[in-house]
Length: 172
Image 1: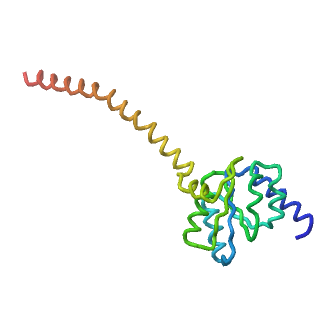
Image 2: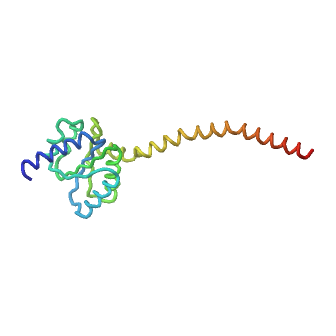
Image 3: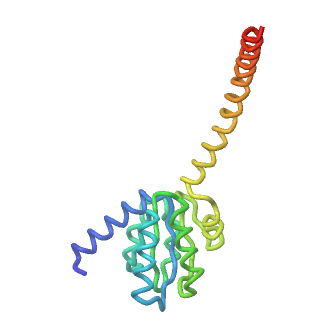
């Protein structure tokens, strides 16, 4: 890489660290190109990104960001997985690590919080933002449906009473 390319890469990576909801750092030694491409495509489909960066450049890019506390994780062959949704990157990395033992999660960051490997695993078990929104919407709609049923019930009963009186008058 030339000096200008390095500067551009560091600037781009710095913007990524500032905009990301979560960042996961992992070792990837021994992962084949096909496995890495599969991992990248799964992450892209979920809404995240995987990058392999030189540790020195990643440490420079971390300066001045909220995730600056994870600079110690950049030793050896490391990859960076990140996403705007704080749950996506940890979830995809942990799912991929289950099937591929060569991916070893070192830790990560979520905002100013530095995460250990166990914290990343715990974060991966949480439902995604979309799932939480769906559950919340379901919880809000359920009482509304019940209220509508209770309010509509007397009107339906009145209609049945009037229908019964109408039939009685017709019979008479």
